[in-house]
Length: 149
Image (cartoon, rainbow, N blue to C red):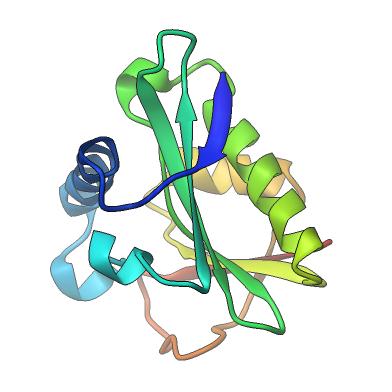
């Protein structure tokens, strides 16, 4: 597996982002989702990472938003074909390393209890529940987590 910074505006990225959106819409209503579009991810203060398998197929993505005092995880997604290979953990490890290089003391994220596999991954990586951060409102569908680096 290879993980690299890529544009969120490529076809592979669009496929991953669309898959992420579809997975969220299976369990959440539009007003319960705080996602970024591909064009919103195409910003100088966002690092978009794509994992590729040995055949160069895109098998996962995640974005790191640089908010100067902390980094935020957005759009972690691994389609069914990429699951069970440690792809999500590898993407998160790379994201955390890049957050450290930016000088962040911690990484934060917003997810939801209905995304049990994601919550379990984050907890296993040392993320702990916290309150809302940034511009997020308190929302019953949201679960906020943070990890000190």
